[in-house]
Amino acid sequence: MRNIIKCVTLLMLLYLAGGCGFKDIDKRFFVVATGIDKSDNEQKPYRITLQLAVPSPKIEPGASKVQLETIEASSIAEGVRMLKSYVDKELDFGHCKIFLIGEDQARTDYTGLMQWMRRRRDIQSVADIAVAKPDAKSLLGITPVSERYPGNTLFLSFGADGTDSPFSYVQPLSEFAKRAFEKGLDPLLPIIVSDSKKSYIINRTALLDKNKISVVLTPEESQLFNQLDQSYAKSSIHGIYEGIQIVGAVNDIRSKYHMKSEDDKIVITFNVKLSIVLEDAPENLYQHEWQPIENKLSKDFSQQSEALLLKIQRAGVDPFGFGLRYRANHHTNNPNEAYEKWLSLYPGVEFKVDTKINIEGTGLIQ
Image (cartoon, rainbow, N blue to C red):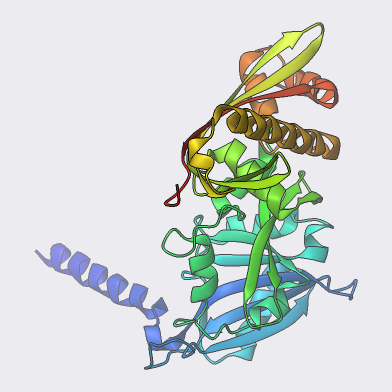
């Protein structure tokens, strides 16, 4: 009995001692967004900016309050540790869901940033990653007039609860890390730009290789990539028919591709099916034959898609994961042999896009 009492007492003391590391919520500073830029100091190449949430009793548009802390350091981990001396509370990254990489840093090397984000235990793998233009510090200093909670505008820009834009690509940390290391699959990130009116514009996509940005897609190309890669339905298509602008809202889209070898080269064929409703078209179109319009829009979509695929190919990146599928279908004893073979074949790959567009209606105006 005496030994049992000693054991119980020891366990209670250990339990109480373990609680000494806990800090109350009012003793914590919650980081809601983090920005990492390239500094001009070679000795301290990283400029880290933390957006800290300041509690406020008001919950209304424009009531958001944040505090920015910035430091330059030789490493990100050291900079974050040094920033603890700038504030009076413990820094907590548990609510940080947005990480911004400055454009200059993204065009130089992003691997060190990703390593730190993956290793730190209180950073969520569902946190979104984006490129900030011109830099992350200036974007984090923007406080939109419609923001109700600290950092809420950026959360809604990428989450399913807010805007649903066909021009932006959502890239969580887990997916970004997988693409950065997987052979035959390259990462891509949305680009956030300030509109100089206390708001953001997110309509471009940066395609990266295993180290840095390789090419940037225009808004039209960003939407087209989402349609081909993700079968993104809440989007639109554009075309010209007999000199008249035609715009259709996509109700449904199915995009898939297959790969085959022809005469010592790879041919990748996309099969795309779209169902659209016309939003911008000439009057009295309802009484006309739709088949010629569908054929013209299908041809235009195929040409635009093939041009985008060739642009990505010339940049030497593979965001669609063609190389990953090639590796899966070409097993060898040497795991690197198939990948090396794919790298030699990719510059000569031929792309074909077969599009079939079905017009379901001309809108409310007949």
